[in-house]
Structures are given as structure tokens and as C-alpha cells.
Length: 465
Ligand code: AMP
Ligand code: ZN
Image (tube, rainbow, N blue to C red; front, side, top):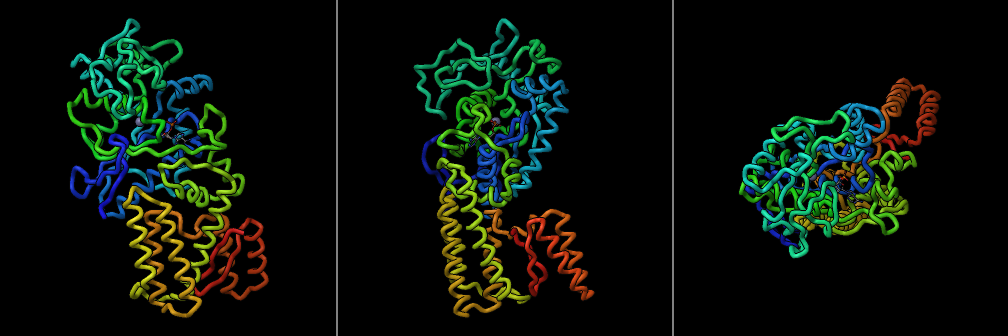
């Protein structure tokens, strides 16, 4: 079956065909860097990572762009409150963002443009909209997009156009559907902005949030590209405004497939900074959960279903991963150093079922069901002594293929800190020198840091205690 995605634009499943054979151009809205991202944000980034990895596993080359929103109402307000220059302030959270995505094993996109590096492109785009008469200046020198001039405004979000208020204006970046009105492309400088301002032909100020994404996506991907993602809260107004700006300026269709993930909720409420019901990755790591366990819970629910994030869910993720680890250990012991031979039937069937599930709009629940079916069949085969070393090695390579997409099956051992790994090395040296007392002491030392070391034919293995 061909690769299919649910397109928010058509509200239906569509076969995926990129504009250029063999290459996918995609844009995903990135973090606003005024705070540490919360687990809700990471649900969106993990979904996009799964999409990215599955496209690659399906044979596509990728140009994936994720922006960093380093100037907007929130970044300016908070940097001023802290008395820091905007760049110094946002750098802290940009660094934090990259640390967090590494802990969640999220692959790096090809490009991470920061908005403040593309102001000339934004000015050019706004100028094009002014020249076409779809944008206008307000009394205070801000520039607004006239939604009356774009009859398709509201198509993505299914807005009732009769309820639109052309001519009325909304200055904030985020507004409700009921308040849909002309929106700001450029905000004239005011005292609230401190020293954050750029010169444009129509006056001093700064870009609105929506124009940032139009300018940066088209800069890297051209006027039309394949996929644009975000959370469902981005559909309106953000993505609706991106379409209006981009298509009005270029006269070309902006994006072919719009994919949006449902929210992550806590006690039934969207996790968000404004509600104060959020936790960061650091909070959860501090409680002793690993990035791998958190990633598992974030990806195990289909992206279009609401994800209720709980500690119990994390413990279930831990248990599921322990089963995976135990199974791969058994396969590794059976395989020894033998090269992979023919795949056992259950492994080929599992891989085919996994791929088919992911082709079907990233149906990860079915994909994981295929993985656990493999585990059951494989464990049974191992119990019965039916799996040859070459077959076990082949099954391990199937697990590795699944993991190219899931990014979560590699054992937890790889996550131990460098100091723990150094202790493991010292212990290996002690064992080689037959210093058994020292080796035992080091084993205890490693245990006191939360890791069990197990010796195997392939060398020592680490497991979280
Ligand atoms: P923001 O920094 O608020 O612009 O959000 C960055 C990304 O996270 C966007 O794609 C949002 O749609 C997404 N997002 C924010 N909150 C949640 C949530 N509770 N669940 C899922 N995605 C979210
Ligand atoms: Zn965006």
C-alpha cells in the first residue's frame, strides 16, 4: 500500500506524492525560545521526528526546516523583564532546546533558521504584499494583512467567512476564531519593545510571528513545498495566516500536505505554559525517568489522538522497554558473533506489518503491536531452540530497522553518563588484570549510580537498576 497521510486541508487521507521524485521538503514550526519547552511541545516534535524518520526509511531524501522563533511578543517581554539583550536571552533557550531534543533522540533537521537572521526576507515579503494591495499601513505605522483580499482565508481552519470582520484589526499574534480580523505583518516600535527594532521602508518595528514562518519556509523550500506540520493549535491563526501571506505574495499553492498532531493533556486539559499545568523534560529526568521512556510514551499514541500524559504511562513505557531489552539481549546471546542469515518468518512478517502500519498515516499503535507480536513469536522460538544464530542475527537487524523509525529500541545502557561509562572501563581493565576485589568494588560503585553491569560474551552491558 502507498504512503498515506491525513491532510488537515482536505480533512481526509491522501496518498503522499512529493513534488520532486525521491525528495521531501518539509517545514515544522519550532519553539518560541523564551522558556524551556514543555512535554506538550515535545509531543509535536517527537511526532515530527517519527514522520521524518519514516519518510527516510521509505527511501526519501529530506530537506526539513524547523524555525526558532527568537523574536515575538513573548521573547521581547521576558527578555526585558530579565534585563538581558534579546540575543543573549534567547541563546540560553536555544541551547536548552538542542539539549532536550538530544535527550529524546530526536534527529536534527537539516536547517534551524532563527527569525532574527531573516528580517530582510520578511521585509521583502511584506513589501510584496503592500505592492499587491493586500496589505496596508495602520495609523501607528504597523502593517496589516487585509483578509478581505484573500477569499480563501479560513479554508484550512474551516472558518465561517460570514463571521469574519474585515477592516477590524487584531494586533496580537494569537487570537481566537471569533476574533478573526486583519492581522499584523509588522508591528511598529513601541516603548514596550525596548531596543528590539529594525528599519523597514515603512518605518521602524519588528515582524509579526506569522510572517516569520512564511519567510523562512519559502527561503529554504521555495514558494511551494510538500509538508507543513505543527500541533492542532497552530492551525488557527498561525497556519491560516501563513497560507494567506505566502499565496498572496507568490500566487502559487504554498503547501500540499498539512499534518497536525493532537494535544498532549494533563487531567483533560491541554498542557500549556499559560495554564501553568506543564512540566519540562528536566522535571521528568529529575524524577528518574529516562529520555528514552519519555520518548516512548510520547510516540506510542497515534499523533491524531489526544495523549493523556501520566506517570503511570511512563512506568508502562519502562515495562515495555524492559521487554524489548530482554528480547534483544536474548537474540544477541544466541547470535554471538555470527553474521546475519535468512530472516525468520516472524521477523520478516513483523517488519512488513510495521511498515504497512506506518504507511497508513503513521499508525504507530499498530506498528508497536507488530513489534510485540514479533517479541512473542521470537521468544517462543528461542524457548524452543528453533532459532539459529544466523537467524537471531537477522532478527536483530530487523529490530534495528524498526528502530531507525522509532528511535527508542536501543537499550538504556547507551544513556549512562560519561562518568558511569568511565567506571565500566576501569572495571574492564581490573577484570583483565584479574583484580577481582577492585572489579567488585567498581561494580558496587556503578550500582550506587543507578546502573547494573552484566558481563556477556560481547562485553559488559549496562541496565538501569
Ligand atoms: P509554541 O512554542 O507554543 O509555538 O509551540 C511549539 C509547538 O508545540 C507547536 O507546534 C505547538 O502546536 C505544539 N504544542 C504546544 N502545546 C502542545 C500540547 N499541549 N500538545 C501538543 N503540542 C503542543
Ligand atoms: Zn510557524
